[in-house]
Length: 532
Image (cartoon, rainbow, N blue to C red; front, side):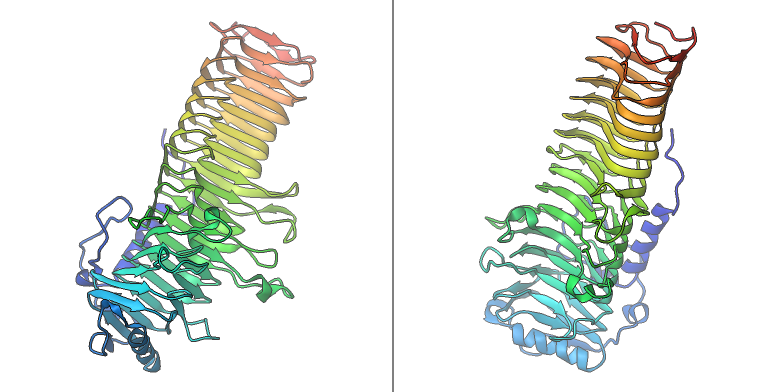
């Protein structure tokens, strides 16, 4: 069955973003040191002239002509900064960095607005001192934007110069693009930190490993979206990130000894005094070997995670709502997690959505068309949500539960395929006003469908086979359950409903070949169409 149609046209948006960003550069400028791996696909289509497409002044400053040596021994930081300053003084321009290794012993380098920095494929800018390697704007003026960085390698050199620093930090920037570049060996928590920035594009960026921080490796993430709580303590208007697209990027380990893979590839955290980040898209990326979730976001209004791959990570995608200190009630997050592939995961779920407190829910979410193959945890786990659509997912070979819904309302789970899971196929705990329709389960270590509490549930046309215990088990005081047209096959029972349940309607269910029927509910409404 084809995937449902949903707004917006995400595939079209993905293609549009790639065309608009890549058209900024000529084909010769696009070539860089990236290997041709999944998540770094390239196009050989002609490019527009960069001076016309970017609007940047084409005055060029070559760092070699200004005296940079590029031998990895001499300190080239002052020359690189001089080139950046010249571009800034002229209102914009291009800084070119030819091949070589450029040591920066007194970072950070400060890039000004309306500047493009173009590194040759074999150029490396290396951090050889404390502080971040690169940031936007002079000290005290971090709002510089319309910045483009392309090509080469930005080396955080964390194994030699450890600390809590990031490699790149951009604050309050409007208009920022990084493309076809490598950011490696972060010394602390992040490769790229974005604070209160808008219109950001990371395209074809390869983030290779980080040392971690004093808080421990689990606190590190390659790309971090954040806000400064202190900037909004009085007004509740701390700057947020908005219109951020991470496209065709790779998050992986570094070849440098002692540098671990990233715990998380992309994370976005708001704060108690900030609005949620807005319009965050993570498209076509590859997350390799993350020791936590590849994507971990919270406090976002509009999150799209589409077409990514997650091999050998501990978990896949985690989205949580904001804390109650910000607001109460359902947040219309409009979260879309579609067409991703998760393989050989650890103990964390492939997809996890969670409201943080009783009156705070994830809302307006779609989880569709994802493939999960192999993992020690659950396939999809949702806690405290409303208006969830979970459909057309393939969940296979999991140690936990295929689909776990807890405290969910006004939602649907349809046309999911669940095979060979260690626990329950579908587990519903205190779920209300929700339809469970046309799902197929083949092989579960416990029950096929287990319902614990809730009301106004409808289970229709599900096929539950190869279940070790009960095909469908209902308890916990469930009320208003309708079961029709299901095929339920369990070794112990086909269908079991305990005495705490009431207002059960069931008919047209096929229990043949199972352990039979045990309905102890109060005054069920049935007809002879149930086949036992």
